[in-house]
Image (cartoon, rainbow, N blue to C red):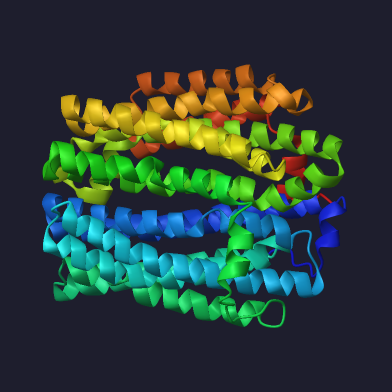
Length: 486
């Protein structure tokens, strides 16, 4: 497994950076391994359900994902920051409060989501599915909270293993249900055994480090949530950001457009998880540096910015030129119009990689109100644009809306940070280098290279060859990946 260290003191050592890079790379690799499983199983799932039921399935998952994100209330990121600096009884007490708060908020959230679906006039199967999937969200929320202990100590290999196990179980159960002809609610219920299995694994891993039983002390919960309230609302806005688009498309443009947007969103939702893994792996170090060593924080922001920009551009390249293949794999010819939707969303996905860095940096600097204002503003803009453009052009209009809002974020976030912390401005020398690599890779689309998958493979080789040749990739990243770092 990845690097394991028992104390937070390791975060101040030179080896912490390479450990975070290797752990982050491992998490991304494991994540994409899960993606392969998810794409394969989704291909079977979408074909089994058809366009309309696919729209309902994605709507149900959007409801419960919103619940999970709102119930998190920023507790996971906050817990990672605090467990990186706390020790002894204070560390154990915090974990008990995190478990109790997260569990209670999730249960209440699931009930509210089902009520909202009922009042909003969604079909009964959507209401029932929200309650069923909600059980899985409760279990997954507890597991995520316990895994904060592993992340704060850079035990990222085990975190990766848990995530992969969940994907593996989900994929296996989807295949089994397709074989026996399971219905929509059966597929929704898969979240329960998958989350339960990973929860058991995580309990075994963290036993002895943090307590496993939650504490139910509402007064302490208030003390925990009150200073965190700005970030909690900001985190809620971040969760709603993409999911609200799914629900708005379903409500405004109808089931078929929701199915097209849902197929594209299924791919985008997977991809936008990558920047959070990349930056999240380094966040314990950034949080400690924000408190103790501002020069080290500036250096870390510069390195992570370069990495996020490079990988964000590469992922956007792949989504643009492999959209037809990706949609065909996920949904088949019935979902062909979703390929145009996915291409439009590729721009927003690229911006999301860099935006993850700025969001985590603001959290590390304890600028919670700034995160609140920016996230709520982005959510408001996104919802307004989706409501207008989806009514005009269905799923494609919604895709333009989400990408536009993400680009606005990419400008607003760094402006807010640099206004108070100009020393955190990363070097922009990497930008023209990445742009040159991207443009040259795009030029290969003019050649008759055959299927899309071949074209993207060639473009990827060209892209990374150019960024390496131009010196855009941080040396520390190469050294750490090649295990030459200390």
